[in-house]
Image (cartoon, rainbow, N blue to C red):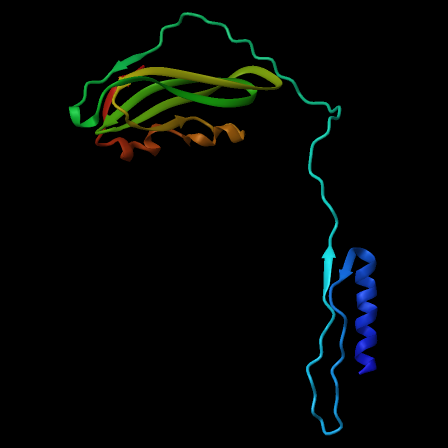
Length: 194
């Protein structure tokens, strides 16, 4: 019995030095009778208070990149589509259909070229073309848009061009050319073409 008790005490001492603990019960060894009748023993019980953790904030000086974007209002011609649909599609509302891309290395041109419609679905086809002017180490977001006055419609975008290697561009489907999705627009009608 002593051989079992010594490793337990050694383990308890190691554990006791790494945290605060309060003993809540005394240890009681099993009583052994000569004719092998035993009574259940009792292991000691402990309340263990582990490390206190305080969570908060503190003020430190760190370097962060700062980007300044200047927005200017300018009058431009924006394509406007006014779509009359059966009443079952709901009331018309005006909204902007926008395509955006984030590019680096070279300037790019992004334009909405076509809009296909079928039922309450629109497929917007845009073209992304790489230009010759270098951007250096800058990253730029470019966009194009059209105004749509129609009931709430499902809009899916296809961009013809090479997908820029930026996470921001994952919102759209990039294809090499229009034949890559021609089967998807076979039953659609072109309602806008640039």
